[in-house]
Figure (tube, helix red, strand yellow):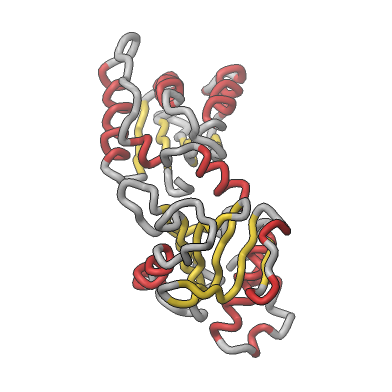
Length: 270
């Protein structure tokens, strides 16, 4: 249950119709992410970096929310009633991405960002990805985040298809395989990988090699288990290094075997 959803339990929102409930929660989530929500009859694109305009008429129909970043149309939100299965809604939101009026400033056509949301569940797609896929997100991205992604040119998933050449010098065969095999998987648009390593230095090598791809940001990093296995200076280096990656890393270890498992998830935006 999202924070916005929980906070509305006492407000009487559940007396509304299912789609009205969804819009109330969506509005709350957008505001929390820094979006300025406006109505069509009186909207001002310069009011904020990110502006969400309700019920915006397009060539292909009326978008529930049209998102503007830095005064240019950048994406849409398709709102659905509580309980709707979102897996089949992508086609509906996609038609709005190509229906922008000719006189409306836009980032690109089709618009790059698409959301489908019930307020409880939210899917996101970046159409600039080589193989765009809807993925669940906790909430809506901040306007600053979308603007940053747009300034980078290629998306992370596009860059994963063109990783710099892996330098084999100084790596054991198992280390080389542990790095190169997941990269093949990522290039095939498979964003999850589990890597098992027998010693912390293996993780150090993988972390060192993965920073070959600049632009991965906003990672989550957590170490679970006996921290004495990794010297404090190495731990600090790992944290500084992986904070630049767009990954979520979870390390777990047993007290006896000391086998490390790194779970790398590129869901986030990637």
